[in-house]
Image (cartoon, rainbow, N blue to C red; front, top):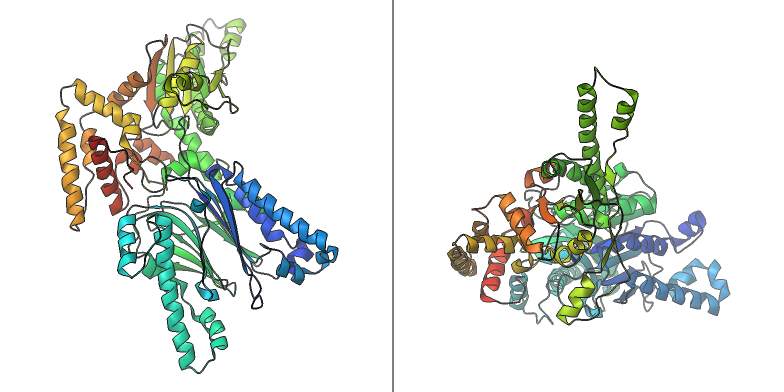
Length: 634
């Protein structure tokens, strides 16, 4: 995606099911778990660059010995930073006592993170600051081992205010209103309650205080705790948690908005946000990795026994389609195939735009994440070229000479890497005119491959704000002096904010929204903005009384075709100094569903939100836009 946009967070969980000396004997290192966690987090670096964190739980340690460790970083290279610190600590311990290398039990006692249970997180904050306090995992501490809780996740809640109020009604005094805090405190409350009840049961059975501890470990029901804690959650989430004594869980939202995958054998249980991460790091087949069922929790008891438990009633499956288009690594077999299909399906619109003039068209892509869709588009282009060759041969069949046949056969699709991002360039000046000039040079172009009679077709995976296109990419491409520049988006028009994790909170930042507003003004129908505002205000008032919302912002787009909005977007991103004509082509929602049939979460394109809170957020976003309020809608 050419526009800068915050990505999703990523989670990684590793539970070693064997003693540490098993991994030392089989794999040559007692640090097997730490090494695998490092790889899993690096393989998900694409999901988060604002910060990274790691927590570990050591099982069956003696009282007085440290069994919980946590490290977090918001450095420029956070994953490298935390594992650099861990490595330095390990080397320091070995330097103090060289004999430590042969004593696994002593290693476990003295070296942090040499744990059987590890939870890692890579963060891309959707809002708020980037202080170390915002970096996962979060830790809720207690002198009772069972009440220690570590949480990390990929999530956003739409009803944080409601959840915050629930905590107050429970008698708590939360330190802040962030959804991470409200979620952790809600789980922590019911965890405390469950531990207290089990302690009373143990005492009633005549067990001593010391004997009560293993009784609690055995009988604690993570399923019941999660059902109570998550009862009123509204949002998209893949939530991972560790308890101090060694239980663990990963919970996924009931619509399957946020992704989670797991793998288990007799040595490990592994969870990650992306399937190819597990495939690569543990060298296992695609078929051995399972998607965590929406609304379910994978529960891992201290004993190593795992279970899938349904926590929420099922909702219609609405897995985030942006994961398929852009966020997740394209090395996943299904995602790779889907992205190629997206490129192939948008090609008919491109052919119409260039009047099927393949010979005078140069194809390219921006940025690298659009490369797979580009391959699909080129497959469709080659199909078209083959048709044209066949027609040319048939037209000359009675007078076909070798030279003419050779000329036809030598026709090829012209593909070039036209736009190259200069990753070293930083727009360090904030003054507008100076900054705009710097932004215009973020991309370089390849000269000498485009002729004045040529069309340039360049595919992007999505267009959000259009800012980078307007201020940089189009200006750079125009220097090649093409006849026409066609910008193709493998995703449909982004018309509505996301409220489940992607940083698209304000309507006025979406170029499709601005295009619809501009069209209404041109056609003398600006009053519809006032009508939508009134409807949104009324709907929000009804929500406060417990009634459900509907998305009133849909009315803004109702009177226009997709093509009309696309043409207006082209006008918005075209500056007066451009010599080439500019056209913008978007994927259709129907074709998106064809390409990604199992991942139908499309609320940012259609306004059909999978949870009740989504419609509340979009109506609030419109009210904020109308009132000039810069606050986020969630």
